[in-house]
Image (cartoon, rainbow, N blue to C red; front, top):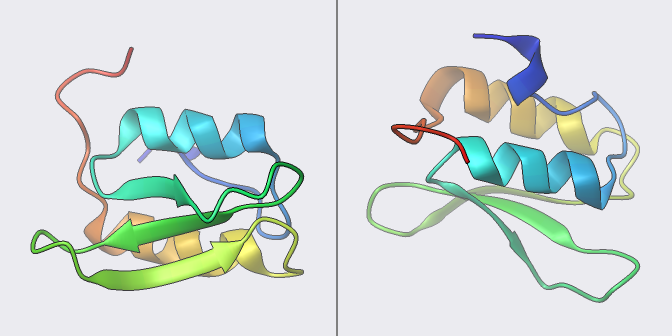
Length: 78
């Protein structure tokens, strides 16, 4: 899986999060507070399986692990 579809291992920017949401069906920005937000991964039934605030020290690490194992790529990114 190309690393361009992944987040940095630590905190991430809105631009990085939006890029990931363009590639994956099961990743979305939620709890948007403007300066900070959560990126959330959900299973096919819509249940949350992973989430992290964008400012957490290891936010991208856990989300990347989920993306590598279970991320559902969209047919085409736009």
